[in-house]
Amino acid sequence: MLVSADGTEIYANAVGDPSKQAIVFIHGFAWSLMAFDDIFDDPQWTSQMYLVMYDVRGHGRSGKPDRDEAWESKRFAEDFDTVLEAFELKRPFVAGWSLGAAHLMDILSFHHFNYLAGIINIAGVTYLYDTFLQDLGTPLANHLVAQVSQSKTVEEYQQGAIDFIDACCRALPYEVRQRCLGSIMTQPRKALVRSVTREQNPGVFHEVGNLPTPCLLIYGEKDEFLNERLPECYREWRNFSVEVVEGGSHVPWSKTDERAAKMFSEKMLRWMKGVMKSAIGNEASQM
Image (cartoon, rainbow, N blue to C red; front, side, top):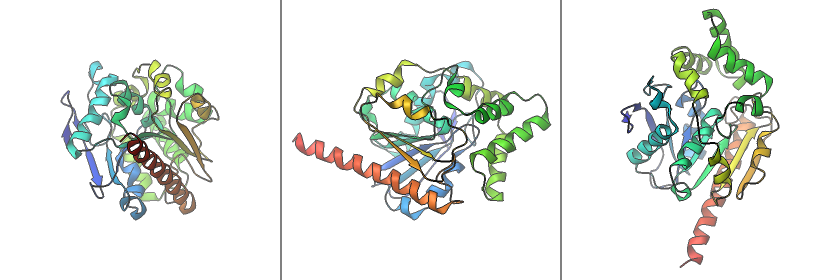
């Protein structure tokens, strides 16, 4: 358990060889770091990368503050800094999944782009603003987020949580599905709502797009949460790549679909290797 700059506890975990290139995974709305278990248990990943993940504030085993200032963009950047310091990470890749992709902008709002090796948006939002769900989400996504965050009865809330998890991945094993539901059911409603209503600097997304920061957008072909507009948001970015995982769900690395999970891993690892190779070449040319 770590302690962020404002005193909020942040639960984090790491797997693999610390001498290898690090990548930090940030989970999405209402989930916890257990979302990435299939990646952290995969030798294809652990043999090539140093894997780090943490529970976002308000989620999982991390603290769930209720103060307004605890939900400022700066706090999420500080949480990330705390994780990097604890695991002694230098220039990691950062992968934000679903709502977790918004954290990429929190981080780059307060750091130079060289703080990171590259950023990866896994089936996620660009940044948080008043209409981001309507602009980037499917009608189903809008309905489910509203049902989970605004339901007035226990029955509506429970059904909303079940429908939300099922839409993320239709074939989750029973045990995994129950763990996911447990994360939602035990999360304070205020934390759930704050995670989608907090404010970010809208200009940062476009500023980052003009920088040489490598960015990958990767998502599943059968994602039920994202609409077709997401890739268009990056059309003017300077160093951007997009990959689609054939047959993949909103959780494209889930081993419930071995073929999609393998494709996801291959595409993402290949992209990171390319970025690292390019960085080495640039360093050599400057010597």
